[in-house]
View 1 (cartoon, helix red, strand yellow):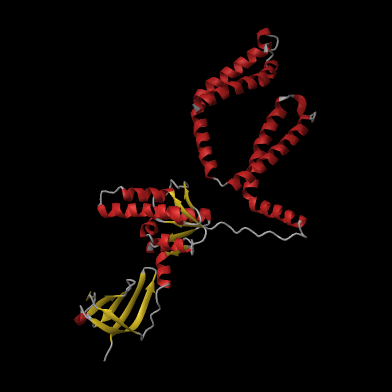
View 2 (cartoon, rainbow, N blue to C red; view 1 turned 60 degrees about the vertical axis):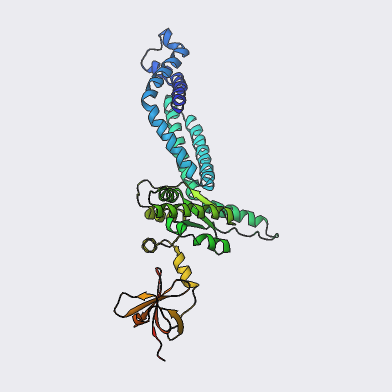
Amino acid sequence: MLKRIIQVAFLFIGGALGLIFLPPLYEFMNLSSNPWLNNPYISVAIGATMLFVLSFVLSDYFVRLITWSEETLFKLPAADLLFGTFGLIVGLSVATLVGVAINQMNILAVTAVIPAILSIILSIILGYLGFRLGFSKREELLQMFSGNASSKKKSAEAPPVKSRELYKLLDTSVIIDGRIADISTTGFVEGTLVVPQFVLTELQHIADSSDTLKRTRGRRGLDILKRLQDERASKVLITEIDFEDVAEVDLKLVRLAKKMDAQILTNDFNLNKVCELHRVQVLNINDLANAVKPVVIPGEDMQVVVIKDGKEHNQGVAYLDDGTMIVVEGGRSYIGQAITVTVTSVLQTSAGRMIFAKPKED
């Protein structure tokens, strides 16, 4: 359908161009004495036919261009489009004024074709420059308008300044983990939670896996997203922005975080390190869990049950109620027993916390 519309547009444009440009061309070629060529309908028919035939070659390119432009415009924020359009209008207005001045110049008025061509070129160049200027200077324009508004209302109370929108990108691991829903319910997570479509696609592939465990984890992740949409006070945004030239989901997240000036919410240790290398702010759920765990001080005594042997010789392993692992030196002989241990050191990383202890001497 779009291809047919483009071909019809070519037909009408060709007729208009034929009516404007063909008569001067006849005079230049000394063909104006021909009565057939002096007929304006003949010029319209010739121009329309030529451009309509040309449309069969160019219409596919125009269809792809329009489709690409439509997808790009839909991905742009509304503020960017507004100021870009404002700049485009200013650029076209300046081009119109300059074109009027060119038409008044006797030097260039030797032929009517030169002013028309210059006007078209100026409209394209100044329109593009105006759009780019309005698009890139939107922050300064907003500050200028807000400054003018505030100067007119000096006696009135200043309105509260709206804070910048905070975006937090969710990766697949933190969605499947599920703790983000509980944290979000408490209200400690500010801003908008953003779920990229490529993360949602990966989650759907996991939910459709033939492996029972993967399928269960994927469906759990989809349930968590539904819970976030239903219970969260702030909105959960699903964005269609993608990067076709990147295959890895983690790298797509990093690039999207840079594009949106967003933070990444994850519990993936490797993604945490990649974000640090790219200087992207990352919020690790494991870091938060470690931060709210009870503080354990070296020299403190605690009651534990040794349940298995450790990796090293004569070690035993016990666990706290929150899942923190305690490595008991010399605790292998106490497997299955409840003993009192003394904390010797604590190792805490983004991957979790580990406590080292030894049996307390009576």
